[in-house]
Length: 377
Image (cartoon, rainbow, N blue to C red; front, side):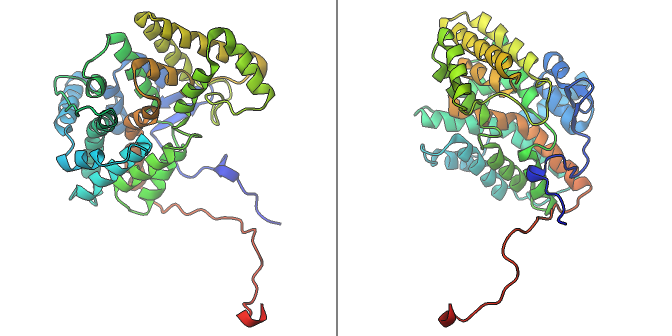
């Protein structure tokens, strides 16, 4: 009798981690023991990044020193920016950031230094420079000059400045900052497991992150926030949104942004992101913002009423990014800007007690047989 195969590794415990956990009793995603919804509202993303890497929330002095260290690491090399400028406009922006991070790795003379101090230094470097590279890719696609990072601005603020040349209202920045906290980490998801698998072979951290980016690109993982916005645009109007959803359900159309492999009672991150999205819509006070808010609410209510399936984080994040002005193909690279914290924390954790990740497989092919000469076949 053959052993049971856990397809997709569903339910398989591959390792242990102290980075994050979904607590069943509260249905809450926690980072280092803190509920993510509390972190998103009460801490800036720099504090959350510090927590993910250092296991504790920073004091004011520690946060000030961390922010200075991050700002000092800003400024991608001229060669890396040149590589980005040469990439194809037909390629997805995730291809651009994947290539840029790989190039960063080959240029870093310390790439193969996997000491804790060196890994932490490279993690901060990617945290500081990936937003610049994502913004540079956006601007060159639009035929606009690249904007260098401004050291007077905090991490979330510089992303807007490097994309658009200005920083929006504080409520918009706060909504974005909240999304970054909510997207930062999620245990052994596909891209994190990819990064840990690569790191387990003792490859360098840039290779691990490059692999993570490749995994996140998929529409069943990070690319879902882009698919959500395309779906909302297809919904067309608040009045037609309910009928659109009913037709999609009747025809078994793939509906993005609903359900989650981990959560069974709704994604604990959604209420916080939805509340931030609503506040941003109220501050914007435009017809377009109100339209997408109404469409998303109608689709949400219809799905829950008809199927009892709740939205995941991508559902409110997609339209929020769209109303902030980010092009839809840039949604998943923004996810990278956040998840770099979780990925690197897991790489450091993996290398702290490393075992090569090498699962078994159930063979279902032909039984062993002999090779006959070609003349006899």
